[in-house]
Image 1 (tube, protein in one colour):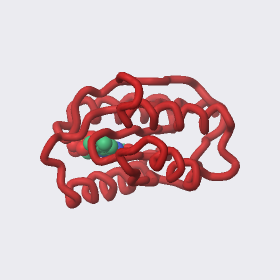
Image 2 (cartoon, rainbow, N blue to C red):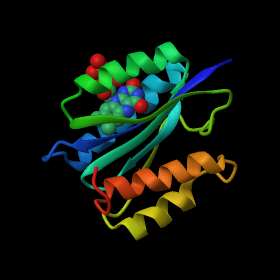
Image 3 (cartoon, rainbow, N blue to C red):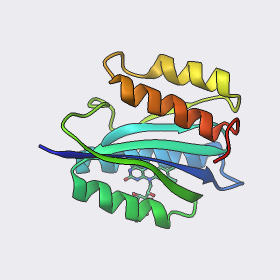
Length: 138
Ligand SMILES: Cc1cc2nc3c(=O)[nH]c(=O)nc-3n(C[C@H](O)[C@H](O)[C@H](O)COP(=O)(O)O)c2cc1C
């Protein structure tokens, strides 16, 4: 089955609290399990980086909900492609909290990625982690 894999970055609402992040994570895991969506959510204290993968219609509907969600802004699609296989098959939504410093963030994210993840996906995650770390302009 052809799946859609979409990568975006966004800016967390300024007053986002730890409880809000937990609520986002819990909701994401619950809905994604029902919708057949899997993926990765990286949060560095100010920005989100998320990869969502699933049936194209389910992904499009989720993107619609994400764009309306006031807990973040500046929603920007960074990559949008059709894939044959999932990169995060066992993760209904894995939350990876990382440091605001790029080098630490890169190491944390790299450690957490499944060892089987394709090189292209690994490189994209690292590139986008750099983008949200402010070492390159967004
Ligand atoms: C950074 C971030 C990531 C999110 N990830 C997901 C997700 O993976 N799946 C999901 O169903 N909702 C996710 N949500 C929540 C959705 O934006 C939305 O609130 C939720 O799907 C419920 O839809 P509703 O608000 O229209 O009822 C996320 C929200 C934020 C701010």
